[in-house]
Every structure is written in structure tokens, then in C-alpha cells.
Image (cartoon, rainbow, N blue to C red; front, side):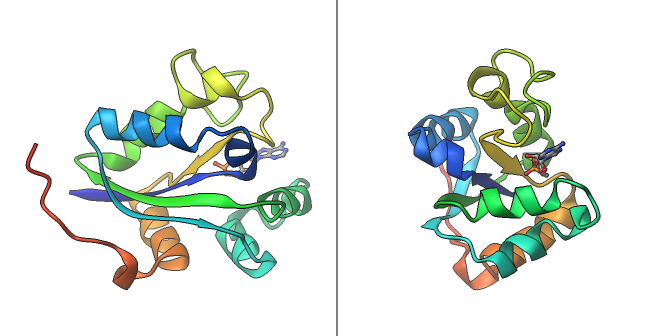
Length: 143
Ligand code: CMP
């Protein structure tokens, strides 16, 4: 079983897309094991996006992610990371296929609605950063 960190970004929250996004993940069969609506500190945003620190858009990215509440989640399931990424679509919505979350709802790479971990290492790091093991709920999914 694999876990992944998924976040509805401030544009997705503002546009009322939390329910739509949660619904897609639920219907796919993934299991929600952590969720919270929260404001993001600059410290957390900078730590989360540390790998982009040298990129020209880093400041803009941190400004955006701290601009309003995000909905942070942890989803669990077989191949949860790859499946979530295929459901989200390509990072740049111009390249994201219709039917994917970014393909259906986003227009720009900066405001692309959703973030998801890109590898098992990122997932572990991001879940630790945003939730910590204690905040993850373990339960059996029987259907
Ligand atoms: P995300 O999956 O959250 O991971 C890094 C983010 O950087 C990415 O989604 C984009 O929203 C953002 N990003 C990537 N390229 C650019 C860019 N050229 N300008 C602004 N933001 C970008």
C-alpha cells in the first residue's frame, strides 16, 4: 500500500473545487487517511517547495501558496502516487489531457489547482512535513 500527499491549492479552494477533487479520488477507490483545511506559513511553503528554491518562479510560488487556505490530504492505495498523478494531469494545464483535474479546471502553470507527490521519497517527506505520522488515520476499507 502506498500513501501520497495531495493538496488543493488556494485557487482550487477559492473556486469551490475541494468537493469535486475529493469525489474523484474517492470514486477512483483511494482511501482518505488525512485531511485538513489550513493556512500555510511561509516557512512551511518554503520547506515544501525547497527543490525549486533556485527557480525564477520560487518567490511567486511561495506567495501564491500562502495567499489563502489550502486543503491538504493524504490518500492511500495501490500505486497511489502514480494514479494520483495521472488523475491530476501534467503540471502545465496546457499539456494536461481533458478528463484530468488540471486538464478540466486549470489554465496556467502557476495556478494549477492541485499538488501531488511525485515519488515515494517526496510523499514520505511531504506527509511528514504537513501531517506527521500521528495525524494519519488507520482504518479498514471494506468495500
Ligand atoms: P506543483 O506540482 O505544486 O510543484 C511545483 C509547482 O511550481 C508546480 O506545481 C507549478 O504550480 C509551479 N510552477 C512550475 N513552473 C512554473 C512557472 N514557470 N511559473 C510559475 N509556477 C510554476
